[in-house]
Image (cartoon, rainbow, N blue to C red):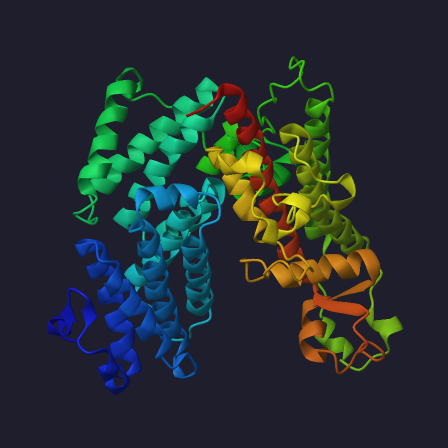
Length: 501
């Protein structure tokens, strides 16, 4: 579509939009989003949002749908960027524009990962990078790293992913209490910024990243050419059976150690999440240090149960069993399944225990009977009451990350929207069935072959039927979310005690 149709106030005229094809509308939304930010004109974004309502999303291919949501996410992200500074400060916690941006980021990735047609690598990487940038912005820097890394696995020379990841590691370093860890993060940040500036990146932001690299060079010059991290693969042949468990934890980033966010390095192979500086605080007589130790212990146990279950899952040709066997013959009494169930329940329960910790530490006026991770942030657990006053003025970035992570959990309460995470309702349903109903885990082939049609007496909603690999992956997903939450919690407390500006 020709750029001549763009004016300082948007399209000319808007009524012509219904003459455009879906492809033209999607392209124009992207153009308007960029033009609005470049010109600093919110009216152009209003026109882009109107165009988005005219796109027939039902007729789009999955790849087209991914591009559509990618452009719409930029419309909402740029809407926040163009807010006056005082309004940005007012919305520093609840950011409706960023919430919409995040939703469209994820819808773009969901569509992208189900697309059948060939997908240009730069487009795929841009979508992953967009989500990572959004997560970083709202304080979920641990989870952001996963999406920058996804982009870099696909295209190692994707400059914007490298640059943004390098910049994020610099911020992560400033949160760390361990000076040695912080220095290693800064070294990794410098190396990524160096690499990124040799590649193609947006010329508008190149000076920004270049300035950060200069500041790092001034601080880190004494450590030039020094190596502080050793790849775990260098030691795998020298180890015993413990190596498999260690490498699984490293590769899935499940150690409670910030260094694990840098990759699979031997120095990360311990649960060295920093000790909370609470034991000497006379204003807090309760033992929050002990509470946090219990949180760590339960996470470590859930993680080990998950690994043991995944290691012992039997390889069986379940498809040969047929899909219409009575339930007593279909269900395999396997200890590994029960370990997975326990791991899922134990990990999921940690969110509410984190909420209890937050209530105690920040002395939030919430009844202990009503504390849960989704509702803790609001007086009387009601979103309509607005955010807790104690939190509104806080600049605690990791704490905001916890707040936004809580939005990814589904809360069965009409006062709350569904979680931003697409899987939120399903994860909630899994936990509900584990706690109050029944969960049946089937071999993957049997589950695929049978569906519910071959499971007699299971259509009343009391039994959740799931394939073994699917449930194992969802358990791993919960473990990763909890691990991120525990890191945010630790760093949020350190932020408060050190009064990081």
